[in-house]
Image (cartoon, rainbow, N blue to C red; front, top):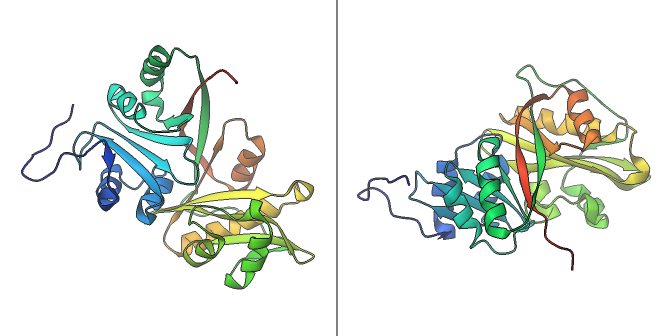
Length: 266
């Protein structure tokens, strides 16, 4: 266990109160791996669990309100992280570093009595010189005037900021508008002081037309103008998403892994 000076820090409870989310965010640090969780901690749209004492800690778990079954695990102590997962309600998979993958997997399999599926998360970072320019006549940045377009298509709303209006006010979004309807969109799914995570979705009939690539380039350029480094992450078998990232010139940089207990289907 890691111990810090009790004269300057207070021991954290396993469940962290929202008024201490800023302490956890500072302890996690601003990196491509933490950008999405830093956003949710700042907005108070998550639950957090800590083992140890801030600003240092042995393990931490962030459970985002929009997707509570998928949690992010941090720290260097797999036993402490396993202990936190025992009190986190409703989780179905945990995203961790490659260093934690094997020791935590062994602990979970032993405790749960279940096999675990390991699924890789591929991470990309925009190069310093910028991304490859891609434009499309149907694609543009979205503003508050486009709110009705987002509200009309739930699959393209983006949940990071809590609502389509909050996304347009606080984040960055670009989309393809065809015959007055929004058919594809990329947006900031995380916005930390240093990084901007880009998420994307395109309706099935409109895929393979270059909409996502052009929209992602617009969002990335706006992020660079804001002083943020664009980042991209996707599942290891999401070849379409990986092709978009590589077409734009994103550079693959590390990645983490989902540990997914294989629970029997009722």
